[in-house]
Length: 134
Image (tube, rainbow, N blue to C red; front, side, top):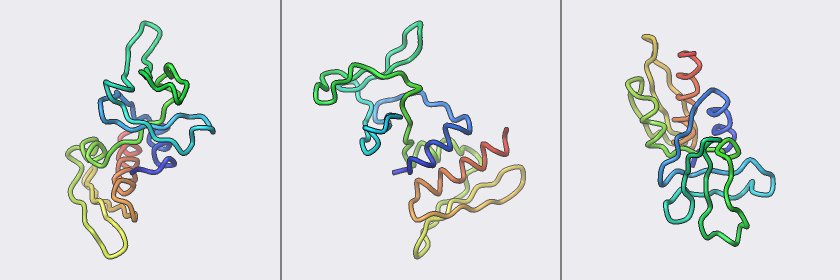
């Protein structure tokens, strides 16, 4: 799973989250720091209102939450979502003895990012791509 630090960096770099079933997220509150939630039509569903988008908690009395504003949630994208966001720039994911490498090509330049966790290697590549496109 992507690290919280890289998820924050992606959000700060301008990555926009449009919640879908199966998406994971954390709440930007210290008391929920260790908790990861999953969007699901049965328990947590995105709802659109004129005042903005929220994540509605249905039947989760143990958390005593009704809903949270989308901007109070931190998206933790899956590897496949990060790969999809890399689009045509993505070239390869390689397993090395102690790390994973993600290779992208952007503006004619080959870049390689490595990390012990594949999701974080994808996130590092996406951060670089977003930086170069801005």
